[in-house]
Amino acid sequence: MRDYIYPEMMVHVPLCTVKKPQNVLIVSDNAAALEAEVARHDAIASQTVAATDVTAALREAADASVEVVIIDTLTDDAAALAHVNRVLNEEGLVVMKHPSLEDEAANKQLMQILGNYFKIIMPFNIGNGETALLASKSYHPTADIILHRTDMLDGQKYYNCDIHPAAFATGNDIRKAYLGTIRN
Image 1 (spheres, helix red, strand yellow):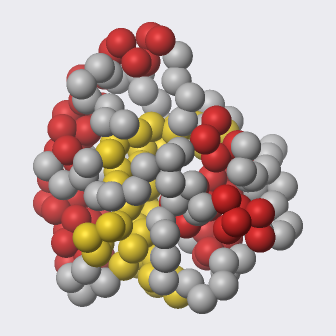
Image 2 (cartoon, rainbow, N blue to C red):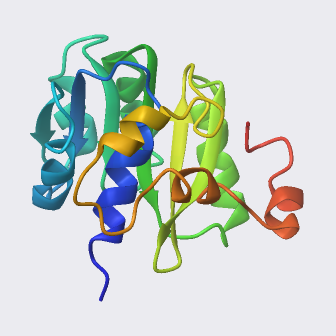
């Protein structure tokens, strides 16, 4: 199907939100498409670690060494999320694939763990009915979008400066269900 949407949204949403991203950590067992999207941005280095054991992979990363962490699989492991916080610098953010907002109890628990480390926690649409979570220490994904960076990207099939903020739109049912849990 339209398999280009997922990597474009997982990469460009965070990289066009953080003011000066230089280092990206990708946690994935199948990162080729994500790495290719990161490569579209000039002067951004990426490192990929296996998602098989997220905690072990993150344990090896240096403190405050990256601006963006992209996690290809959802983790609600508090230890892994503590490591995500540790490897991110003071303005960093993480995006992680999130299959659905249907399981409110599990999602609220995850968002509460993320709330220990991040000021902003927002789900966003990554296409094909799937969502991801963005958790940020500093930057707001719709207020702090770097428009000139989105405009300078070439070869995108889906992502653009209009899709970016629109991906964060949620219906009233989601707003009510997650009131006080989603932080925006």
